[in-house]
Length: 151
Image 1 (cartoon, rainbow, N blue to C red):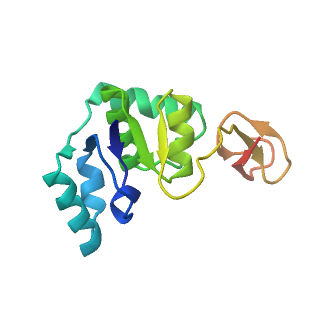
Image 2 (tube, rainbow, N blue to C red):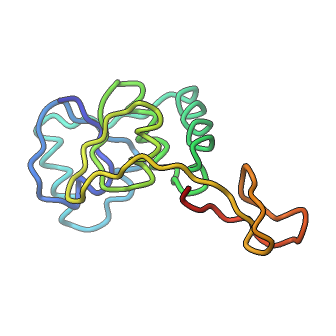
């Protein structure tokens, strides 16, 4: 199994094996002793820290925006997606937004503790007048915020 580990993989005690990768931004999120020890143990077993290329990051950012997750995914999430795409590897995570974006990009997902997220689509609705839009922002008709809602 070739997999890219998101932060939740380091907070879990579930056994992981195979060709494992993570990104520098994920490593930077590991603050507590338990996750740092888990990181060290996985490194001893062959975990590699690798940064994805700029072009892949740009492609992932565009794809995340198109599927409605652009405003929710962190830079760390985008880096995990980009590395998974480059390596043609699955993502180990429990993050539903990350899972949805991965499904949309054809990246396999390996959930840790939670049931895997189903694929879902967002729509954008004005909180004031209820009109539908293509993206979040401010309604040009009534000025209220446009928020994303599950379709």
